[in-house]
Image (cartoon, rainbow, N blue to C red; front, side, top):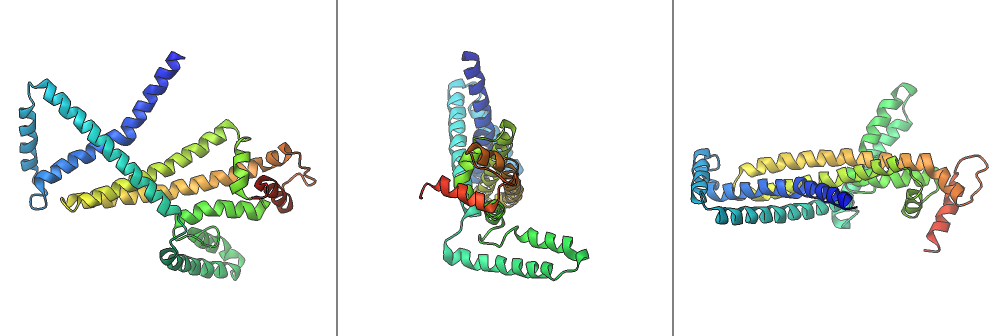
Length: 285
């Protein structure tokens, strides 16, 4: 048990360092650089080098102040890392938000109009055009848009498609299905969920860098690149998570029904059976 706890603590420390302290230390270093260079000397590398040399000389052969400074830097890096994680949570909430209506509704209407035009073109298409037109429509959303962002619709679409296919409401069915999933399936889903969180956190870092640009303009460029990469990673992670969720339902929804003693005459879960399961899971809610 002691060996297990030691290994667990080691892994937690490594993850803590990788996700919070190291990126926070880089940001703290850029803050110090920005405070020294400002906008006027934004690219003054010699000025920055002289400053670093001065700090190094000031703490040379002074181990106690140097240790205190190192501890302060670590604490500052952790604080900034936690701030970025909070910003990432806000980014993730924005990605999946349905409102506020005054802001979301125009965006939803715009995305929905594009999707409906693509859907109508698909329905009128000849056989040879179906694949390309279906890809064009699905690039907007797999289901009729109801969220202002692509990521929000992609995550929501998994539940819509499952409800359409099986009559099952994932909000109530997923906790029951989770208990029946194989370990590898759970691990893949957790990894996809973690990738989405990391992408949102990276986008949060981008926002912090852009904010630093008020003092040092090169930080704006770094923030835009970091935010764009995080946003792209978020799209990939959301698509992966939605696909894995649908796959888990496709492969194990029959196990769920059979575990509850539901007879499957056609050896599949029909929408009627799914609605029956949903009502049972709701318990009148």
